[in-house]
Structures are given as C-alpha cells and as structure tokens.
Length: 258
Image (cartoon, rainbow, N blue to C red; front, side, top):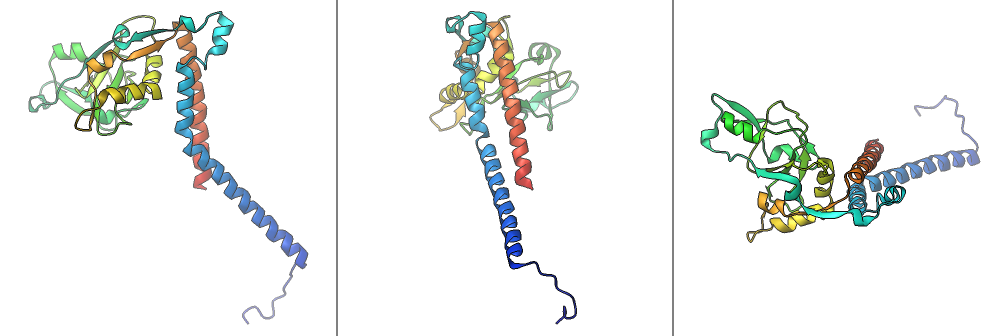
C-alpha cells in the first residue's frame, strides 16, 4: 500500500517485452565479449610461442629473404660459446657480508623471462679485481642456473645498465657477446622460445628431479643463426608482434575487470 495514490505509467505489454528482450540481448553480448576476452588472455602464451617458433624456423622472415635474394642456406648453426663469453658469478658466503666495499648483485629473484626486477637489491663485499672481472655490461644476457620448476629453469633477460655498477651471484650465468655478427636480443629471444627452453630443460635435469644448468651446459647449446641483417629484421618483427600481443592481452584484462 505504500505506492497507493501514485500514478502508474506502464508501457504496453509488447513494448515491455521489447525492452526485456533488448536488455537480455545486451547481457548476452557482454557475456560473449567476456568469453572472447578470456580466450585472448588464456591463449597469450601460445601466441607468443607461435611467433618465436616462426622466427627461428625462418618462416617469419621468408618474405624478407625473398626480397633480399637469400635463402635458408644463409643460416648456420653455431654453439653459444662460439658467440659469447659465458661465466658464472660469485658464490655467496659469510665472508661476502657487505663491509668496506659493498656492491649490488643480482640473484635468481632479479632475473625473469625477458625482464629484470630490481625491487629487491642485495650487496656483496668484493675486491676491485673481482669488480673488474664480473661487472655487468650493457646487453649482457643473464640466465637463471637453477630452479625447482622445469618451466622456470634457464629463464633469461638482457641487462641494460639499470645500475651503474652491478655483479651477479653464481646462480646467474652471464653471456657477453664476443663476435660482431650476433645480436644479444636475437639470442635472448631464441633462449626464451620453446625450442631454447626445451634444450635447457633437458640439459638441466638431475637424478634428484631438480633442474640445474651450468656454464658448461649453456656453452654447447646450438643456436640457429641467420645473417646479422636478418637477425635485425627478426628482432624487429618479434618485438613488434609481441608488443601487439601484450596490448591485446591488457585490453582483454580491462574487459574482464569490468
């Protein structure tokens, strides 16, 4: 009875049904949009893997080779040790506690697949001679040596002088270019591809069921190596395509959050 005395303006029954149908249609479209957005997020890693697979089988730059009059015979296979200086870092010991000459160092917690995380920085006590030997340089590739997960072993990223002085712990393997005809970014993308990850995972297996790499195991990994010009094109295409995929994923996540 609270509404007694208030005028009621009901639309005709047909109009009411039209409004209900319209609302249900909008909700259906929203559900469909969210399903598609979820599919984009769920397939993100698969699409990334497909891009890298095409890159290192030559498919991604097939048109480029045709335009430049070269074939897949221009690709060679070289071991990483032919292209990079590969070394382990300093072992953490009580004697390394920072005192007179503390220097920041990278651990497994700082190196992720394709990115460096400096939110947690730790310090070693090191000598000037050790700094000279192990100081990180621009475009060094850093590889995680040990991990309990087969998916995380060998994850790697490139150092871009994020800190003016930094070294690395022995659980991080450093690769530094030693020849001119290899791009560190090209090698990084390969190591983070399914082919590269599979090789490192297989080489890192131990009888205890853990995963552990070493500088020696990294050195003999075969690298499918295109010419320097084609490497540059491959890196450009990978970065461009992965950027678009990242944008699509982020846009889909916004839809899901609504």
